[in-house]
Image (cartoon, rainbow, N blue to C red; front, top):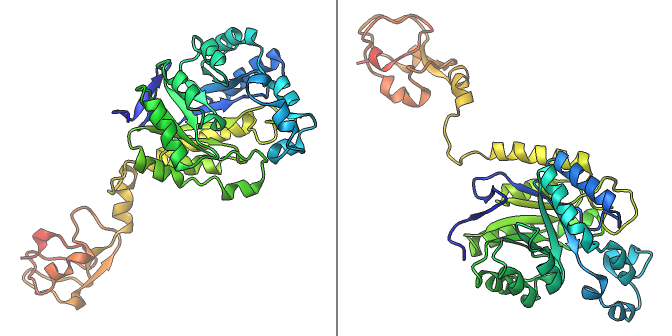
Length: 358
């Protein structure tokens, strides 16, 4: 396992004690248009993304037209597609001539350029353009490409949707055998956008990942609606968040429906930054902004009636009332007071101090 919990991407440190890193997964939401792809990069940057992610594949190197056609019907989220699986992937593929332009546009917008490669050739093609590699959940069992990616010597973000702990262990063993920095991302690969998916995102797996892999960065690759899961994941220690991104969730296409738009993305980032501020240091103490409320809300031991020097104090002589100045004796110190003589005169309502009793 890595010796340090964190790594650097384009000068941005990712890991413990750092703000969550947001990846806007544009994926296929460019709808085959370079102009749209470039526009989405700018919108993602404006909305607070740290990186954008595309997908580099050709239909023939990711899906079998024969295999899917023999299934008889399209299943899961693909059942809503109006075209065959092969046709959808053909239309969603990125023209390789775009790669340099996507990278340059990302640089200009101030976000890192990522893209998920789905073949050995695509890994080699994109390597000069990306600061890190992203592996989708579907390739977590393809140890050959994991090893090929790891040997590039760059950080790897790997999603762990639809997988078992045994499969996660095998993937991490493959990556880390090549001394690769890894971000392991909990994921659920149901892309239906149904509210039922909240029952299956299983954020508590992040606790298991933390226990089993204490030295690697954890993240969430999420396809649920809104950002409730994001806040939960960050509270559980996730330092990388990936969500699909579009400019219009009502557009036709495989990934638009469950994606976030610029408004919801900005809200997610802003709420996350508030949460990070709220998480604190884990040290229970009176906070800086509570210094005055300690005085006005706590009770002090006070005189019920005026007493002269030398008087022995009884329970009937004192009461506990707000405020509580910093030198006042507090209710838990009543045993120090009762039966003790006053060292000076005290008037009714005055608070007791240590130097006021013998």
